[in-house]
Image 1 (cartoon, one colour):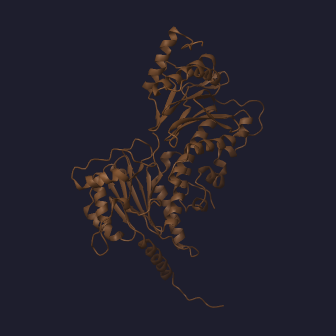
Image 2 (image 1 turned 45 degrees about the horizontal axis):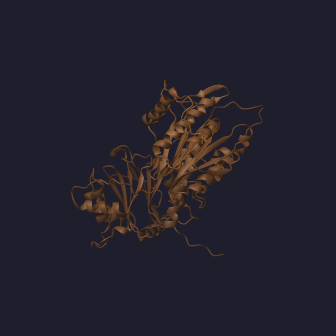
Image 3 (image 1 turned 180 degrees about the horizontal axis):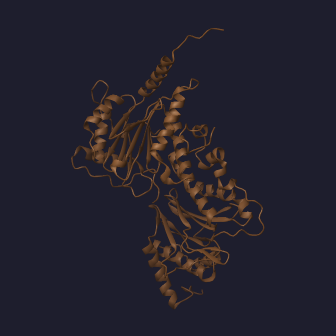
Length: 281
Length: 252
């Protein structure tokens, strides 16, 4: 049957075939060329120059989870974009932040959002948080061929588990390996520094406001030591994207809220460039 | 080899139409009404699991009367069509008109191909616009025609009588509670003119609410919120539904 959605003809048979509630499964049967994972790269010499997104951090707090990312994309030694957005809502109760090849990552997020929405519409119910995390795993795995050629996408997935009433974080590796993180997690080039900062600042009893401050501190530390991570850009008014997911659902902090946190962090850093100090013992 | 009887094409089509209409008439009717802030779907449905109304896309809702497995099939086809189209182009490029066309083609082809049994379904595809003037409601009978409706529409068994009742009483700019009350009154009239009571728990109600901040405007209404709206419909000062007992929500 003709696979053409532009024509106003009859729905092709594949559309009316009962089966999976997954949009990706439907695509792979009906129009596999649209799936990112089905594409193959021609053999190339050396690395491919494409914008890369950098650092994403996440922190849980009682009652939810915070996911945040810096705004820089780099291409080699050049800053490709100063105000890239790398944290997206996946559905009402989860969000995904992406590090790695920006172009592929944005496409992957778009498909992931659609996958969750499609399931919800067809089944009339949401996937479990684990189910969503596993779905993302499959998508990363299908990108393995590209990852081997230097076009890796490594997301961080955070969501509010409505069955267990708590925020949870899942991190991934390039092969799609998934692991649940306790407390805090980071991905991307600045993640080593961000994780160090979070390790010293994290506590079990953070409030939502403290958790959002913590992620901005961690991103500041990442930007401090990693050239590919962007710090708060006061002159251009570009601040990190900070999102909060609680039982009320996903919420992205407004420009003003994010600016407020970033400015207060910056203010303190003018006196203490290395940030808050933890006690020795 | 026996010679088959000659059946004129007119007779064959009339038989198929009769067959489909009878199937649809066995199902309960449902109504779709415009109100000030959107479009409301109301039907009698004893089942909690098998929905008559559902979300197709951001602004597009779907309602169906007739045989469940057949309209469910069409619904999923519609969701796939809309999602694929939105994925290939943009979310704004998914329209009720496009979807209604595809459904009409599908129903029409099935209706007129001798090898297939005609679908015993009647569909409504509705899209809520930025303003009431931009709302679109399409009714799709079993034979693949499209009827562009305004204000109110009824499909299912007792449709003609119900739409007559609605046409006389529906007006633009009704509140949700008023529209809901009118819908329930229309649905509770029997073929012989007598009235019966439909309890709230047997009602399936959903809205496409243009005031919803989210991209996805479809929302189911049930439980306490429905009870409150039904009560408010009795009083003249109907307050709008405020709280969220929605099922198909998402963000921004």
